[in-house]
Image (cartoon, rainbow, N blue to C red; front, side, top):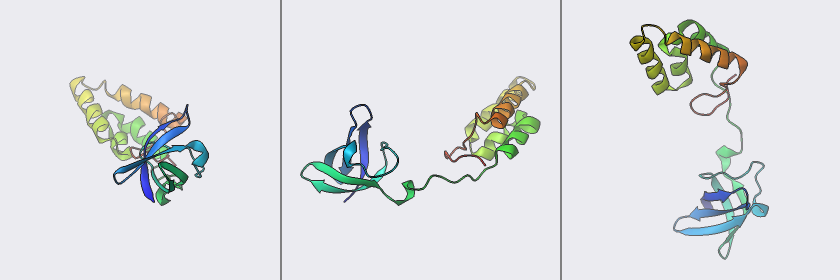
Length: 137
């Protein structure tokens, strides 16, 4: 049966799987996947009364996301054009890019400091994902 994780409590190691109009409880012992369950995950499972057994993630969640954007490109954009927020646009954080550009315009250039600080964070690996949660190359 196909469903999704409605809730999961890591302390109690129990959760709820919802499929159509029915809900099934589960314990972490019935979890097959290599990664822990997370709310919203799509799963395949077997039903035993009101309990979900042999729960496994469905396809797309089995492989980790692949890096698409380059950390050094984003860092160079932040270092040289950080006042425009171009590095944030490159990474997919459009609203942050607009905010950075607006701050630069309102403060007559002091928004460049924000870009410089983010360049340092990018080069040191503290900013390490794009807007879709994919790691940076």
